[in-house]
Structure formats: structure tokens, C-alpha cells
Image 1 (tube, rainbow, N blue to C red):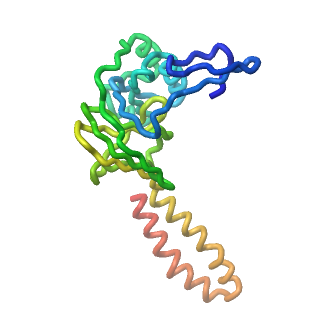
Image 2: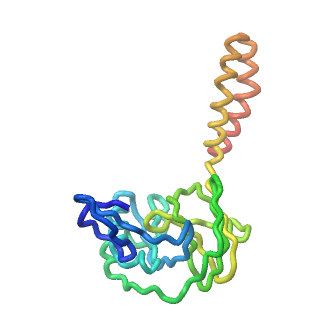
Image 3: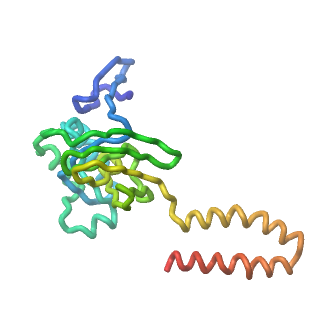
Length: 223
């Protein structure tokens, strides 16, 4: 990782070499997955996220695997027990840094084209964190049961796990309506070209037999 001179990082980010005004750093990694804690929950808007994440990154919390949960936009307004994201820099600076006992072990990892899987042994209540940028289209199953995901600083994906051995799968699933529209777009162009060659009779058939059912499906998705 390359950063300007004077940039602050946690202790686990080690400087390697300097190139003019920039420094090269090394970050030890535990793979795609890690077992972490999340003792703080903040809610707010994107404008407040960068200052909060920067303060967290410069604190000792990343080194002891403490990753606050973040709810953005409308999701944050539905939870009255959240701390404002705008207050995160001040709150994080006062948090006691303590690693505590081991949370368990990530036994194995598997990476697919749109998925990540892990076998884990959990010693105490923890969050399994996937080091991939959070998006609500990520879906998680734990031991075959669909489970909620949360956003963890600095914008990673978290899944709550109780003690025990678990099989966890995270898949990126585009929204169904988006896929319908994508497929429709692929099919429509050649059909329109064919309609132009065959005339009005085909156009009427296409509107009735193809576009009619698709419009109904799209309307049900919005309903």
C-alpha cells in the first residue's frame, strides 16, 4: 500500500520503504474472512462516513478486530438506538482498545465467480467479516439458513455467528427486476429488427405476446 508522508495508520500497517513524498507500507492479512467484534453501531449519511472511517482506521481498533456497524440512509432512520455517524470520530477516540480472548478460527475459504464460502469454528459470539465492499445485494446463508448481513467499517460485510462450527456462504445476487430488464434488452433488439422486416403483423404479435407478459411481471415487482 502506498500513501503520502504523514498519513497515520494503525500499528499493524508496517512501513517498508520511502519514495520521495510517499511511503510504501505492508499490511498483514488473514485472508478474505476474519472473526471480529462490533460493539458500536452508527447511523447516518454518506457525507459523515469518510471522517468516521478515517478516525477508526487511525485508532487502535482495527488491530484488535473491533469493527463498528454502520447503517446508511433510510436504514439508519428506522433505528432509534443508533449513535449518529457524525459523532463517530469523537466516540471512537474514547473507546478502550482491548482484544479479549480468541474468537475462533477460519478453517477454510473458497472463492467463486460471485461467491465466497468459509468453514469456521467460533469460540464466542462474533461477526464473520468478508473483506469485500458492502452492498445490499450480497446474500448470506449460515448452515443453509438465509441470514442478514451488516456493513462493518471500513465498508466490509459482516454476518453474526454464535459459538460452534458453521458453514457460511455469501453470494452476490443482482436484483431480479434488474436481471429481467437486462434480459429483455438483449432480446428486444433482434426482435425489433425482425419486426421491421416482417411488417405490422409481427409488431402486433410482439406487443401482445411478449411485451404484455413482461410489463405484468415488472408491475408485480414494483407492487
